[in-house]
Length: 288
Image (cartoon, rainbow, N blue to C red; front, top):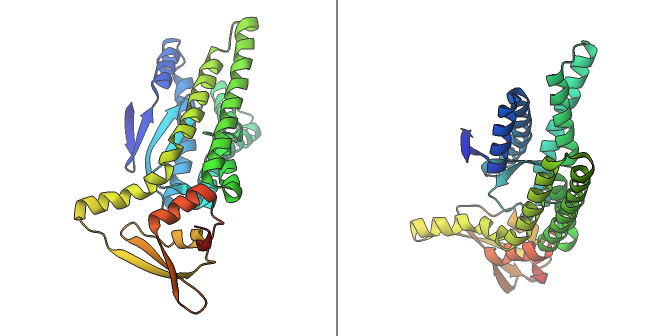
């Protein structure tokens, strides 16, 4: 459900979060739920700001029970470093907010329950999202690092599997809490949704690089033609270096030459992006 737009970015709230909000309000905890939502939104806006600074497009921010998710339209697997910068921004924002409020109110000797809750929420958001499992921020950082070694596809599969494993562990803890202490139902909901989100990451893997190319197809459909741009490169040139030079308004064709400047092959932009998707950013033209 869409609740607002900020700088053209759609802000959505998951139906489970909406139900939890209504439950909190019914119990007279409206201020508490507003603090939670504000903390999650600030966390996600940090992702969005860094993404926009790096030239990426953000379609929407969705508030989820285990945090939130800023959806990047571009295929960040082309440049894993950009994904690291975007992913780390959220936890850094949450931990900085927790630290700033703690230091300010600790020194002023004024710490009410709402302030303590705000600090706790941001501390938990920062730490929990650094867990090395998709779709959490720590999982995106780990995927970016692994993709340099094994490629974006395998890295996503590995970190999504870790996300499922962590969700199962959280569900086990929630089951223990429910059985012995008659509490922990919210934790169980978080575990179920985390497992579903990790499963979705793995299922949508095949469409990741297609999202990167969809803008080119849209432009071609609208105009009936699309300007091409040729790049001449040696066969030992990294595909990542060429991919970074691609532009939305052009379709790139790479002419491969040998040491004598003789043409020995050609590659299309789609072939290069698929090679990056499958084998990672260290692949050279000669290996495509």
